[in-house]
Image (cartoon, rainbow, N blue to C red; front, top):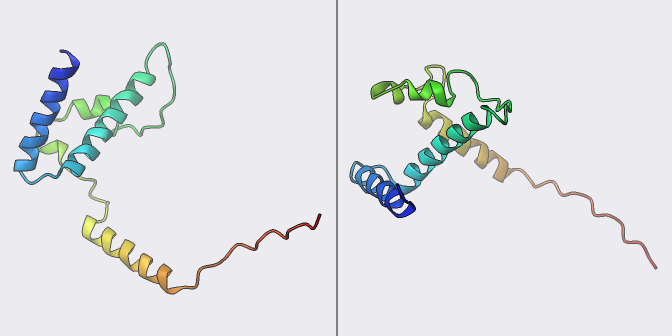
Length: 111
C-alpha cells in the first residue's frame, strides 16, 4: 500500500464516520490514540525493549483481541463524561472568580 492509497483509505473512513455523526476532531483523537498505542507496543519489542508504562489491559495486544461492542465498553468506575464536564466547568468558574495570584517580579538591579 502506498502513501496515497493509505491517505485515501483514512479519508474514506473519516467520511463514513462523519456520516454517522462522528466529527473530524473526534476521529482524529481516536486515530492518534491508536497510533500512540501501536508505537508504544513497537518500542516495547526488540530491539528497543523499553518500558512504555501502558497499563495491562489498555495496551495494543489487548486492544487487538477486541472486536465490535467490547471496543466501546468503558471502565465502569469512570465518571460519565457529562459529570466530568460539569465538574471542569464548575472549577473554571471558581478559578475565574478568584483573584489571580501574581508572581513577584524580580527586582531590577541598577547598573
